[in-house]
Image 1 (cartoon, rainbow, N blue to C red):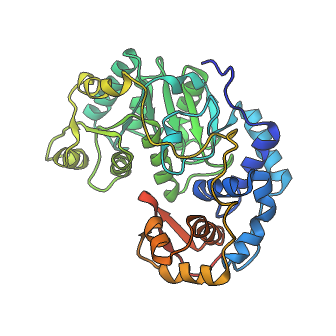
Image 2: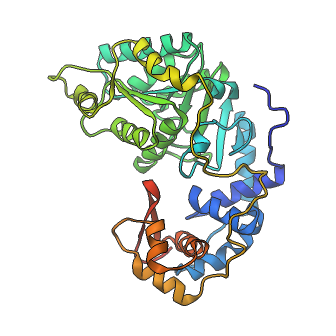
Image 3: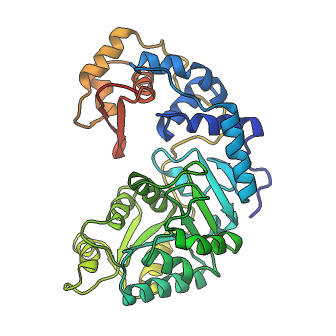
Length: 382
């Protein structure tokens, strides 16, 4: 894939971006707000401790030391990986259009796979033989028709999906660092993906061992990277259904392979079909539904600006919030999710003032962001 003329982060920018996103309580949303408010990650790092204290942080924010970031960059280099920023040519194009996309992704492998129309295949870890065969068959046929296959490297359905599309292009999304594939027995598969025509990606630091709460974040990337998501087998309460829900919220197509009502591994997929998912018995079912989306440029609402875009939000043209403004916002917040637009109307503050206060609370560890732009107030601070 040609990258000629594409925006590109300088080494200094990439270093600052990595240092900022590795700072506790700085997630994709607060990262975007910080860069928009202060013009660069480097400038944001200087003011960040002051913002966190203004938001009620119980102690100083621990910004990663320069040596820590240098060590992670060196670990990536030794592993044959690189950090790709949103807006750069090698960043997955659909992912940058979701709410709060990861500003940086660790990528190992062939970025050209991101230019293929992507379809996710997910399902049960304890999959049946029939489910494994179905996932592998769908992945192989989709790959032969020019589609990329995205999955999460888990046992069962994920593994079969990657195996079926190894030769044509598959993307493995990790829940931990790129050097910590999970499950460990899929390390060889991960190496084959990254050394062939596919790629492995993660938003987590090198050396990070995945925890239970990291898998929904991985699922969000899987759904966000894809035009549609196929559930082959899934129990009624499973990570695959989380992926399907996220895909639906993002406006992606959701597909499901029907299964026996007597098999609990099919209960989740059958439930999705009852709720309106597209029924799949062969690859053609998917291709026919996806075809209208691949015949023209995908039109999705823009979210975060490219790293070289110099246009700032109205943060700079609005007076900074006063303490009384902070108290008004915090009084309006609580454990029930509310929309930011609703918060602005209720407090009668400027949007940039509310955004600045939410950013302070975020950095102090007192704000939780939910899908659909909703937020809640958490007790205490970092």
